[in-house]
Length: 595
Image: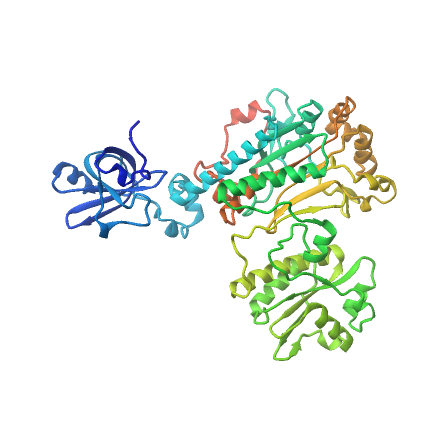
């Protein structure tokens, strides 16, 4: 080894020892002719002293540059009491250099390596020099946290008798899901693989194969538009079990997350987690992944406005599936016109024609729509929403689905504005886990004029709802469950259909997938189910999102070693990139010129 110790392990007990350290030059200081270097490796920092009495070593130290790699041999000595650095684990000692080897000189840095300063540097520049960005102690620690969380997951599932099985990355195209990455087959001209969006079908085949308890830290790929919590390639904790019910999944995942939070953060999270039906989540929070750390819940006023003289609310309240709903953003009366316009634009982006509101200040209400309200309607609003001076009420009048989506988003945006004003406190150390359950099995797609799966077509219906598949598919509940943390969906899963007759019925009769398409995409599954498929179910948790929540970060890119930009580019490796004509010819592809 090129070192005897790391830069974070020497203590007063090591005084007098000769040691060899190697790492990066973090900082260089010259105090009265004595040069001090903070030497850094993955574990921490040790102060190195270069005395003028050792002329040769001191002369070399004069020219040291930040982030150069050096090896130093010297003697551990105790620091004087007035020079002890309580901020460093090694702050009570220093190493007096006796010899030095410069392993590599660092070129001029493209940005400062200090965490606070580097965070303000353009993200694209940091992406181009990602190897330097990783080297920063904070980013190194984030990647180590990720590794620690992954180890906790693996150890827990191993203790629960799970078998880790790798499944293929190259799969067949199933275009009813998200957009896929296609891979041309050289040996099969005109045919393509798709990079797996999820090992869903493979893990179900493992259940037919008798594995019983499978897991995988699975790499998945989706060619989707990117954002802070989405990358084209991602990792999920993929789990499938045979001979189980939903309660078994709940208990397993609660135990796993409890272990992860304890081992990574030393936080005891209470179990079991609360459960909330999908309908209740949408009614109260307007979203199927509610952040329950704060209130601002949605209240329904449909019945109140059925006889209102305000024609907008009256017509919606009396229409099929029409609702009038509202939230009270308490304390947000001082909202600026710019902020209000932004909220209105958000509402419009979700289908609203505008964003009706009432401000309460100085004992009176102000709103363009107030003149249309009766005293009875005002009294009901005040009572049910607890309207006080300093509040602002937002309304949505539309279909239940659309009104929920609008107010769900306005609720979250209002919370951000209240937080910025110091009027709403949400502790970063508060972890509100929640199971959202009883999702609809099917959703009606107006564009396709048919039912589509709310989760995926392999989700089993709730047993008592099976007869409704023929008469009222929209009313059928699925055995689907999502695990939510602080408004973020960590993962979801379901009990699967294991009967080939039922699976074929869902494909062909309910989802209206043509028989030939069913055969080409899922024929092997139906065949497999006819050979004694066990009852089974599973779940997949987004591991990138999970560790992002553990770290208290807002972007999963912070927890990835080599993330891609929102355009799907790796700026360091400069990919995606062009390929040669020969490569294209080998896979029977011709690139069309851009028009």
